[in-house]
Length: 231
Ligand code: A5P
Image 1: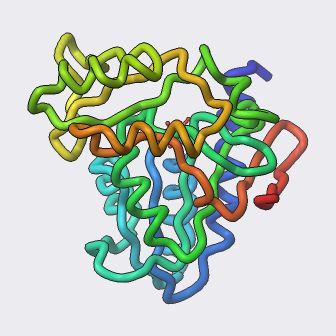
Image 2: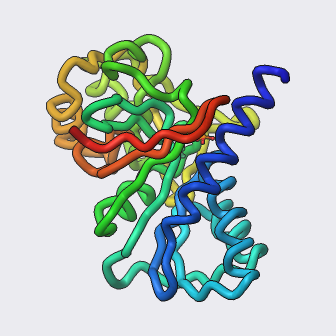
């Protein structure tokens, strides 16, 4: 089996396992990215078989997919029973996560905060003993207001190397109409402190560090599915 396809298989297995957590009547938070897509597809199969739930989507891409598989979407106007989302890196014991390479980090974080239970899903390649191990490999996405963004970038440079994200030759625009600065080479030694420093900067909407939000993570590899609980 090719390495790429085994990662895709792992994402599918993690998504399917997460779909089994959903119970009738629940209000579900739907994450974004390829692993979350596997979850939404698996949940759609259950909905097709008669499971009645409602959901809120963290991106327009997920909303389109959810609707296409028969999931009823609602506004986020009450607590979420269960939110499921992928991540770009997950610290094994704390379940601190780096998210946002897909550009949906702000809605993902709002949904994670609104959830009574927030569960990460991913393949084993996403898991690190310490988030620090991913420094230099995974940037920290920071969503910023377009107004005066070069000035926000200048201030963020005290914490790393902030590079504006581009798509099709233009500055990447989030679903919220904002830009994303990918902060490279930042120090993940103390993720909570780093997150607080970034969040305190005027012009910053939010960042992709998810600290203390996930209660568990469903991690899949070639041999099966493992559940990690926050230590
Ligand atoms: C989306 O904004 C991200 O936070 C995703 O959750 C993250 O990039 C994981 O995506 P994959 O499941 O595609 O790796």
